[in-house]
Length: 373
Ligand SMILES: [Zn+2]
Ligand SMILES: [Zn+2]
Image 1 (tube, helix red, strand yellow):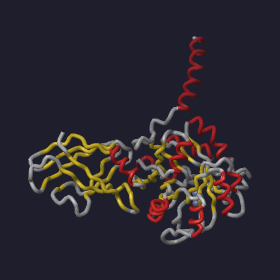
Image 2 (tube, rainbow, N blue to C red):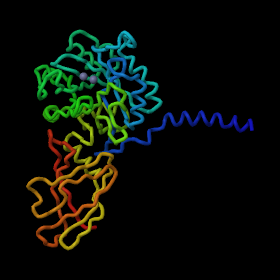
Image 3 (tube, rainbow, N blue to C red):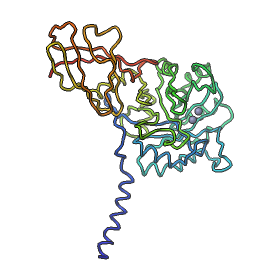
Image 4 (spheres, rainbow, N blue to C red):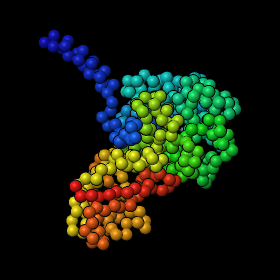
């Protein structure tokens, strides 16, 4: 009896260690594209080390539970209201506190800080740098230089935040200076903290200037206070199309604009990436031709639903769904009537993917051809 207990005890320890390192089975499932791995990264969140309301290890645990690959605790450099209670002078501390937990949970923890200045230039995250303390300088240009000297990726946060500039987001000459000096690499087009924050202006600037399209939570509260997980909601985040699941590969992908922003079943990105995501996600199954119509099943291999409508002015010879949602990892049967009643061999529909924004505020046009099996 004693022997058996002695035998079981080390097994229990082993089990604890093993489960600690295992990847969350609830990993968000979005297809890989173009030979790259599709990773999930939230590059903007806060803890008590600036103005957030959680301890750094809690952010790691939240990411693990949500099946997210990478996070950044982007503490404000200039705004740390809890200084009297918990904050130490060392700006690296939140990262250092979270790091062992991140290693245990296999969460890629990327050093980040929010350079928090009035507009212009506004708030910017430096990411992937080595020493946060070097960003704590008086002049904003010196803070950007200090980040860039460390090879940082520089992200313009919430350019259309009403508190800083009411109305549409505006580009200032300071932003041109940053762009010309390799200190602007991406813009938040989606910010989960601000209600319904999607900036079409920021989306257009990303396309015009070759910048990464970024979505982030900007979480301050415990995640479950702001996100209704029970209803399937997720935090805002960035999809990164990376060569492998590593921090250097995420940086390489972001520096080369292989990203998309994701929030509330909407993906904002470049057409080349969204088209590939659509092709990898949607499969046409079991097409049947009837006398003057077709039926088929559309299957979705992604956790993100796909919403389709007909392209206005197209498809004059076909009658089909008005608006169709192919649910996450689910399928939907559709019917298409050939109005010419020609007994054609196949039929092609011109559609719009309403929740894939490849242009500011506009869904992505796609074609689907239905050919009987
Ligand atoms: Zn901010
Ligand atoms: Zn922030």
